[in-house]
Length: 493
Image (cartoon, rainbow, N blue to C red; front, side):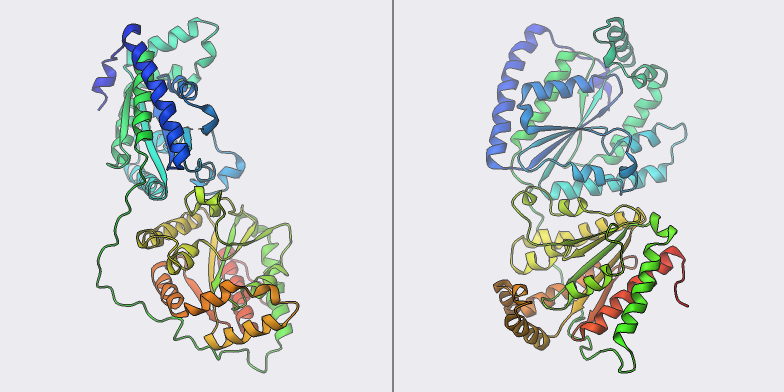
């Protein structure tokens, strides 16, 4: 794998000069062309043996190209906030928008390489880490982010020689990190770790490219050529066509709901509401809750009472610990990123609550029905959403998903009420009426969504909401009981 790089090939200045001149011009032209076309974002992942000149290569790319349109994303040890979030959170948050380039230092490969470099690496753990990385990269690749992975390598002698030369000159000694000096003692182990990590994470769509790094001119030329080839590959990844299937129609969950369900007459709604709110208030103020992020997702038909249910929840919460997010169509800036990007921006820390009024499920609901994305995109989204929610749960988050369902007759009644009420008229829009015309299409999309994304770890809680009071109590009851189980705390008398 590293045979050519460890031969330490080199270029003379005479050989490199015309190549560099052509490369610099071609890189700028390709960069501007991609910017003008608003093409895919490009992520250049930098990895390799320490002391191989990775930093110098990144500096050169910023010099040869227009640095105003490049983000150099350097990730060191995770901060306290980053440690409290899912592993990929900090990488999602700093993705470059479409047309732009990001150069990633200290990438998501760092833990994989650290495990591989141990004297006795855990192969099962390595395999699981590599699978997570490949799924992460595939999601980005499928959603407009092109990934180029460059591994900088050189021989043991060349690495030691380069390190010593830099240390000998006070003007360059600052470039040498402690880990660069340690490499010569652990070269064989680090070499094997690199080979193992590359084999586990290599993908035909996103292969690793080995950059010979002993000679600065050869390193610069190979790096520039690799990035240029990626910039020329401006076309979006062709979407995989949905596989033909004889899958039976999804169960008609919403059609089979009992919309007549309501609170028993013997139940005092105000007292019942206060009781569940009090229990929720105790749980979210409990010491154990400080370790739990809580994510509440609300979906449902228009006029099903999502806003009212959310208000009954927030009434019990400390305003400093929750963030209610009304999700509408993405704006122009958000459209420059993968569709899950904007949701990664708003994840709660432990002890905090994010309440999504509409959510990432828009891709398999409104975007599907209104044909705002291709069939391949929304069919692929089921898996991407399940993976997203699984990552949140793996990080300790409690994710609760609610669908408030209203009958077609009750929705029409509420639409007319809104039109006639001076306090609710703002709630009714032409989109509401247009969506109603596609009632059956939305039912079909929702039913398939339940079937594909209601998992054992993260099920959908579906409640009929023709009686708003009934639905509000059911939502509060579900949150309280789920929190009690998660925290192992009981609030009932």
